[in-house]
Image (cartoon, rainbow, N blue to C red; front, side, top):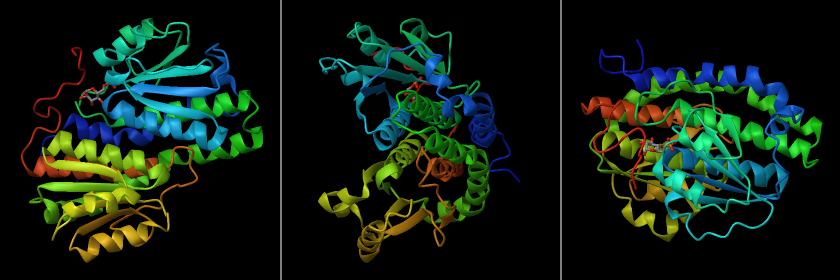
Length: 351
Ligand code: G6P
């Protein structure tokens, strides 16, 4: 019973389990305000023409999803800025910066915000509404995940993606870039997320232990996706590194042939977030031809079979659940402390 292979109930296991309820709570609170634009209006910010997403770690992966939504549904440009590398980046007029941070205390993010430019608007998407970051920006939006204790972020990622994507849809309605009919349809897609996250949790609980048995001796892992699945492949690789201390790299699947394929040998685990892009079949065949162990997450016939919502404004968000559980279960099997991985801190307040 339960997802943890040990008797101990880890914070991380509980936080993964809380994801469907957290998503449901958010949708109950802001679902209507997304479709009618009220969520954006409540921030009292000037309309933007481009978006700049500023963050570190898991929050940066959430930024990839949110940036993808503004381009996909609104045709607006976005750029992703690693907070520690923000210095000197050009911020054009009409840009809204969204600084994303669970803690709101990450030094790299605070510095990037401080360095400005201060004459361009900044919004913080934070879990801690009383944080330093929340005090240093023009507007604040909570990701409403509740307390997260595990150092490796899980439910805060899901909530950042959901609230951030909701905000984008709401802004696009308000700017006249998304019709209210289309917005209502997309919000309807979002409303299916709690169920989809719950289904993914069940499917992953059933499938992941067997996969972990097979890959537990692998020294390195590759994560692949295409399009809206790429940020989730990135997050899967990050979780695996953080928790299991194994090498893990994520790539857009098309990049495989430009280098990473050289790493694939007999038994190399290659985790594919399969959102139905037909080009993935060729990538998978290349890996199999070299003896790689392909683990697909997604469409029917996958090792972890959960129909991924490619039409969802968040892309295949539910794929993150098996990816979290893969990292969690392998780490627990290896005897590592899943709540407090070595060398890492929940919030990094130094350079
Ligand atoms: C640390 C944590 C990560 C987190 C990152 C950014 O490295 O270990 O889990 O993603 O900081 O934290 P933030 O609070 O800014 O989201």
